[in-house]
Structures are given as structure tokens and as C-alpha cells.
Image (cartoon, rainbow over all chains, first blue to last red; front, side, top):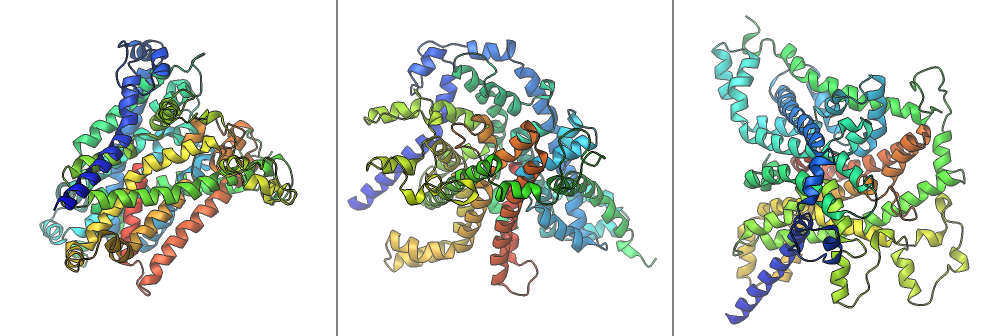
Length: 276
Length: 362
């Protein structure tokens, strides 16, 4: 019994230490953002600032165009998320329920497209955006991200898991295809829609590479490209860690909030996919 | 009359799917064709690559990277070497750690399972920019990591400024400072064998730790799902037989997790060859080009040096590599159930991939 006890305690201890390793960097950055430049450099491990300083946050809102970056991030993330949730479900529904010639080919194409790595698309997308004359515009930043093959796949899988009888009943009652989809199928697909919502928001909020190649104007900086410009040293002298950390903390808040609201859901996302 | 409740499905089907097809066609398929053309052309970035000033140069751009001795070839070779060591260390480490964490938090008797899962997963949801920024702070010369090492009496390196390879550094301990004559020259892609054997640079070690830190949570979730598929009965049967935890893990759990393990490893291989954001943030390949990766080099060659042909060619070489890895995964999984078009296992794995992909656009 005591041996069992001791091993249980040991394994808890190990897990607690591991958890601490995973959490500490975030706590340290939060603390660091309230330190002075010298304090952040001299006491890198301390979770308590020697004197609390809000200078970093003040600067972010006065000397750095952080509010502008945040606004651009919100615009892009909201439109991309809404677009993906709607267009991916439409396409997923067609692929799972509607009989039309060429459906199998389209689906096979989709699976093939999912194998294309994003990082390889940087040059190709830039070329296309230039050709279409939407470089340096919201359109160029948003439209290429509006649909993703992976999202369509997720929705198709989900629609296939719900019984077709309810839709058929509605159709026999004379409801059109779009109305059946909109008022009957989508409400039933809530779990998958929430999953897609979370993934799309997280993906577009954290997107970086695409905004590097689709715009150049600093007015179109999102939080990711803006904060990256802070790190690549457009601030002048010194390491200015508190300022950079404060920016990192602020840009993490929306995804963190989303994460804690939908924690259960997110943790079972891949499990849900398993059941697919 | 004849249409019945299936009436109008064909037109609606195409209508429903057309926005997706147009966007994927316009911003994925066509761009790839356009870039493929650029990779065989001498386009200099001015005007449209389809305009009159651009001409076909055959495989010249590819030759420049692979065959012709010179800076382009050396840089490409260096980037392959750097990324290779990154993959070599990250994939086994993240897979092992993720599996370990999953087994730990899957134990039914464990209290606060939710807390631990959250703690391990949280780094996976933060943006690459924020978390890389945080790591630059932690690994700065007088940062937290070196302070910790200081407690242990170790004088930590100036991580991000140190281009020395860790294998070379290890050999230095035994007094080997310069390459033996046999290795001093003659390696592939314009890099000497000695350079190929450098190991990851000290700077790259930071990115290796960062990758393991941010991806172990995601892969932990995939393993958890796999573990839950194994079910409690087998666990209990093993317990009844008096099988110890180690034997149980290696002779029961691990063999049953094989498909999941395979997925995690291929996803790891695919992901690690796409290292870009972190390189951008740490100074574009510095120190001493030891952080250059093919993904970043392709961007830099095109966008900064305006050598669009070689840049696009590099992107395609990377594309081929990653597609081969993906095909390998699909082929191995498909082979299990011969005959079925898209068997269950493959579908399950693609679903996992899908949920990871749409959460991380790059």
C-alpha cells in the first residue's frame, strides 16, 4: 500500500513540475510586461516586478499603432471565420447530401488539395494576388483564406453522421434545398459549426505568412505582422522586452479567452474527429 | 413529376460548392500553375510574369540550386542541412513527449486531469509570433534559461547569436577542432561533409525546444483519442494478469497505438519541413545562416533578392518533398484494407489532419 502511495505521489510531483514548465513561460511574460527594461533583464526568472510599471502598455497604445493592428486583425479574423463557417458548410453539405455529377471528382480533388503545404503557397498566392490587382488590400488578405479544404472535409464528415430522414421529411413537405439546409440541417450541425468556428478564428487570428506576402502597407499590419515588426527591431536601441512581451500578451488574449470558453470542446476536437 | 424530392439537386449541388471551388481554384490551383511557370522562367519581378518580357529558361533555375556550384547552391544546401537537423530532433522528441503526456493524463485515477491537459495544450493555441517572441526573451543572453543554467553552475551560451554546430562543439571537447582531411570537402550541394555533420546550431536548439513545447500538446490530444479507442477492458485484463505498467505499455498499448503513432510522425515530418514564421522573427536565418530553412530561403530569394525563378523552384522542391511524405502516409494506411476506396482508418487520419490544419493556417 505504501509503495503504491509513494509512486502515486512521485508521478503527481512529476506531472506538476511538467505543468509548471509549460505554464511558467506565459506567467513570466505576463510579469515581464509589467517590469521596467532593466528589471526584465536583471531578474529574468522573477514573477513579481520590483516596481510595477505600466509604461510598456502605455507605449503600445500611444507610440505603437497597436490599436490599428488589433482592428485589422479583428476585421480579417471575423470575416474569414464567418466566411469559412458558411462556405465550408455549404460545400460540405453538397458533397455529403446532394447528388450531382462530378461529386466524386470534386471530393477527390479536395483531398488532394489538402496535401498542399501552406508555406509552399506563399510565392504562388503573391503572384495571383498581384495579377488580380488586389495586393495591399483587405480583399487580398481575406479572400484567399475564405475557404479551406480541411473545413469542408470536417463539415462533410459531420453531415454524413446525422440521419437523412429529417431532411427528407422537410423536403416532402415542400421545403426547398437551401431552406432545408438553412433551417433544419445547420441547427443540427451546431457541434461541428462550433468546432469550425474555433479552428477558423484561431487560424486566421494567428495567421502570419499570408499577411507577409499579401500586403506591404503598414496601415494593413495585423497583430502578427505588426508585433513581428517590433521584434525585427524597428524600435531603436535596447532589447525593450517589456514592450514586446506586453504585445505578445495582448495578442494572445482573444485566443486564450476562446480557448477557456470552449475548453471542453477544443480538447475533444480531435477525439470528435476520430469518431467522425 | 419525375424529379421527386431529388429535384434540382444537381444544380443546387454545383451552386453550393461553387464559391469554394472558385476560391480554391483562384487562390490555390491557378497560383500553383503560375508559380510553376515562374520556376521555369527568368521573371525579374517587374510587371506580370505572363507579360512579354519573361521567357522560358528550361530547368536552369533548378540546376542553379542543385547542380551549379555557387552561392545559390550553397545556400540551398545549408538550408536543407539546417532543416534536416531540426526535423531529426523535433519529430522524435515531440512524438515521445506527446505520447508520454497522453499516457499520463489518460489514467483514470489521476485527479485534476483537466488541469494537466489544459496546461500541456495551451501553448498549441497561441500564435507562432507571440510564442516565438516569448522564447526570444527566455533564451536571451541574460534570460530565464541562462539564469536557470547558472543555478546549475553552467555558463549558458548566447543562444540566438551562436552559429556553432552542437556536434562540432561536442568534438571540440575531445580536441577535434578542424575537419579530418577526408571530410574537408566534397559533400553534396556545395557543402563539405564536415559542414553537413555540424549538427543543429546552438541557435537552432532554441527553435527545437520551441517546437517541442508548442506541438506536444496537439499530438498529446491525438494520442489521447487513440488511447481511448483502446478501451478500459484491455487495460483491466492486463492489470488482472499482473502485467507491470512498463510491460503493459510496450506490449499492449504501443502496438495498438501504431496507426496513431504513424499519423503523429508523418504530421510531424510534414510540419517540421515548413519552418518559416520562427525564422522570420529570429532575423531571417541568422546567425551565420544556420537558421535558414528552404521555406524561408525561398521567400527571401524571391521577395528580397527578386530572384523569382530560383525562389519558385525551391518552393516546388519543398512541395515535392512534403507531398511525397503525405502520399507515403496515405499509401501505407490505404494498404491495410485493400480494395476499399477510402478506408476508415485513412478517413480517420485525414479528419485529424483536417482539424489540425484549419486551426493553423500555416
